[in-house]
Image (cartoon, rainbow, N blue to C red; front, side):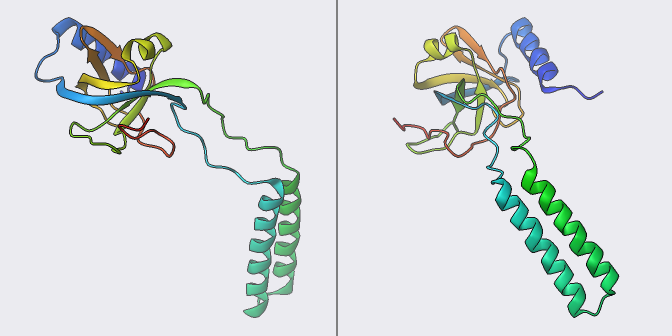
Length: 182
């Protein structure tokens, strides 16, 4: 049976709430930082239509030229050149990047290594609610329970308040704040 992250997180939460925080779950005090960004990160840029069409034309021309230089049959070279032109036209007219866009203004919690210093990057980042972001403040220390790693199940105790991960934790991405960065 393959459990989704949400199922594993709910089971972890239930176990922590019913059994309490034991040695099995406790990780220790770790620094954290709240900020606003994308819980899943932003996809890399896809390039413009012209760039995509030029890549197809250059790749097709290279393949056709290689076949000509190697003495390949001209009919195959002609078919490859025709397919390259058709694919280049399709990519030049194709719509915008089809990848899913993610909300870029979600409240996030970054958790750092236990011995994080100024400039340390987070070991994992997950979404939290707006109320939790207000309660936690911008930066501080909390008792982490669970496994603070990408895809792990975790929670963070701040005094007697427990903050749960709302999305699968992800690793560090470009643009995530380092610890101590203001």
